[in-house]
Image 1 (cartoon, rainbow, N blue to C red):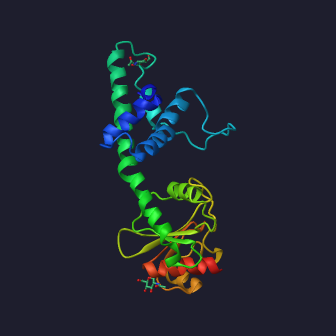
Image 2: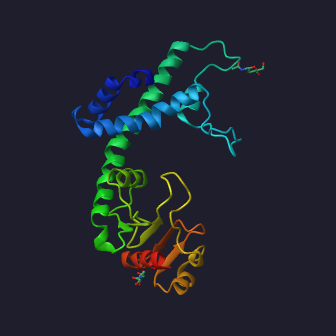
Length: 240
Ligand SMILES: *[C@@H]1O[C@H](CO)[C@@H](O)[C@H](O)[C@H]1NC(C)=O
Ligand SMILES: CC(=O)N[C@H]1CO[C@H](CO)[C@@H](O)[C@@H]1O
């Protein structure tokens, strides 16, 4: 299956067909690149025994539930002799094919549309705060990679530091510090140290902002019971 995907032509054809898009739609190219990075490259790397990390540091735990491991487990055991290899191969194709389509559908129908929310938040950021460094998303969504991409495309200099979005369960909002890179745990500017690890009234007292819910001990995320409260937290964090 990934051999097929390696050919740009077939890869894009599969994507366009699965998502009912025309092959000329620019989304197809973005999804092709993304599927390549997220799916094909990883499978190939594992297949070829390439380490995920350049220096061979010993992993803290083993991960044996990934697709490559599950496909690998379809091989007969050392002492299994009565196995129909052809049917195992079919099972492997079915497994990889289903994962491939699931991944593609998520990327095409959820990940990529989230980009519009990030674009909107960037377009309106100066209406939120004159620093332009606070973004408000209409919904919680996968925003990090999009933000980094768009920042690069538009050569944005005053880079956003905090992203606010509704919690989704009630009126409360989350405030998240933008990481230094999409998968990093390090923030461009973590929430203030004096808030970290505190909750509720104790946190509200320390921050002098009502309705605070929590700030994670590493300062990468926090919450307030309202949008305005979360915005106050972001503004204060910028000023501190
Ligand atoms: C594999 O070998 C062990 C030891 O001889 C035996 O106990 C076990 O049942 C075997 N498994 C199969 C699937 O034949
Ligand atoms: C500053 C601010 O608006 N904080 C709000 C946080 O959430 C609580 C609970 O809803 C509100 O009472 C606060 O006003």
